[in-house]
Image 1 (cartoon, rainbow, N blue to C red):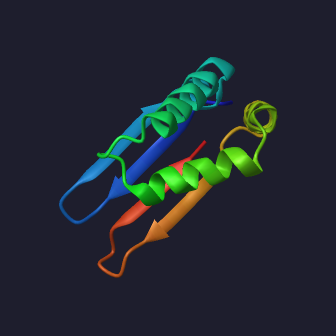
Image 2: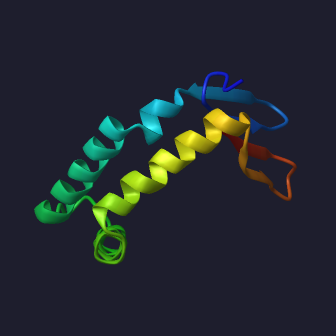
Image 3: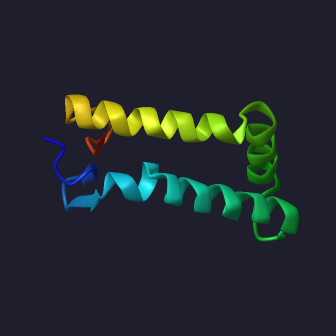
Length: 104
């Protein structure tokens, strides 16, 4: 089954945190559309509180990746999630033993 969607888990000696996030909240078309609009608004505003390198990376992304391709990618991620269930996107451990795991 697909469970709650995405889970971000952080484990360390003194703390274990799990954050469940509904998959559609990240990869659903309405969320993706809103995120793209927010990012484009941030680019146009040239807000001094946003690091210049972040703005440059967003601008490069929009030049390289057509908006429709982002929707197609997110649709495919949702399809794969429905078909195969749990999917580990990231698993990392620091030298101190802290662990981060992101599953979809």
